[in-house]
Length: 80
Image (cartoon, rainbow, N blue to C red; front, side):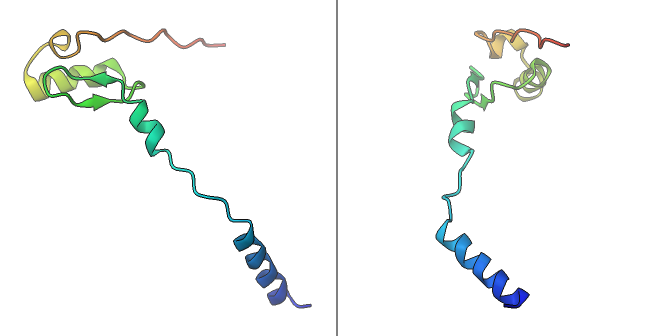
């Protein structure tokens, strides 16, 4: 059996054992928990506060607290 036949067998096995593709889109949509109260734009829960401040100042010319009243800063990460 040559190398070509081995490669063909591997491709056929791969077709038979094909797993459905996993998408991250649903998890990303669920993680959008920060909402601007002015324009209702959603932001991922991992967004940093300075990015939200830039949004409030550039998009709305308002202070951070005017756009994100319910924002709670996440606890700092533990370092070893």
